[in-house]
Length: 353
Image 1 (cartoon, rainbow, N blue to C red):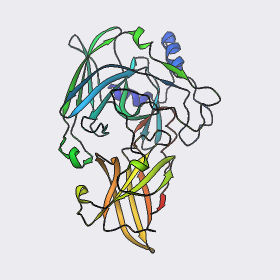
Image 2 (cartoon, rainbow, N blue to C red):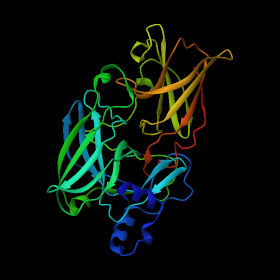
Image 3 (tube, rainbow, N blue to C red):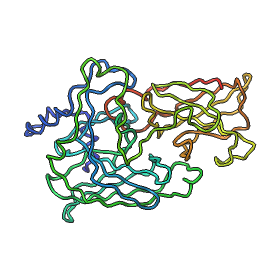
Image 4 (cartoon, rainbow, N blue to C red):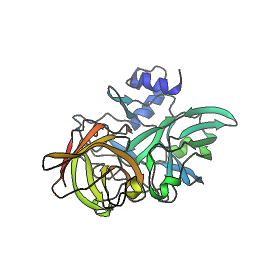
């Protein structure tokens, strides 16, 4: 049974039931206090939030990668039968997060699927593919709890694959397939220096979110404000506590259409922090005077200006058209505390353009 199988098998098991780990449990439980009662089906203030350390940054093949880490986290996975909680396990040392972005635009692509290998003096320590995740302070990122063997120097190799999401404009030429190697000097004392902030009891579990952290040289995963989106913003709606902003571009040529067609783009984002919501399946129906003039898939796309969004070419969009956005599947990302109850049950969004 490999590490991922173990995580799936024990995802609902508390550390309380693990014998022989009393000291470790005291440390881990201090980092994962009881969840708020009566959490809303929306984004909410978590019990706490944490900072991070960045051992290094590398560049190759049109991408940059920053290796970051924090305390081991509990998190939740999206699975066919619903949300599944993954507890901190006894062997989990840190939460390791390779942040990869496209050098030219600063866009963090959610489809490059990093693979991590941790070695020490040539010996394999851990190997895994981190989960695509949503976190309030980190935004979208790839991360997972990792196993290392105490203080020392480790080598972390990060490799990324080719893109699976449509790219447009200058991004169409960047095909990924890069690798980055980091020498990682780890110590328990340095880990314990990472900031850990409790949310006041009267705020935790209430609707809201902590701010995205300022990572200085590392970009964030925000999408543009409605005012900054290209095209003509025609309206917005909400579903599952996510906001969907609709804009129409007059020229669809860079999206597979022609200059006479329009490009209808839907830009979902989290409330409060405008973090992108990738890995959804969306479809749309455009009605005009009671007649359907478009009914089809809204394709996930990464564009230098629209950034991560979902869109389609249409012959025309007229004032008063009614757009129905159907969430065929919600974001298939893991979630940190504060996001696990949102973006799950997502009814249709109705927008009059």
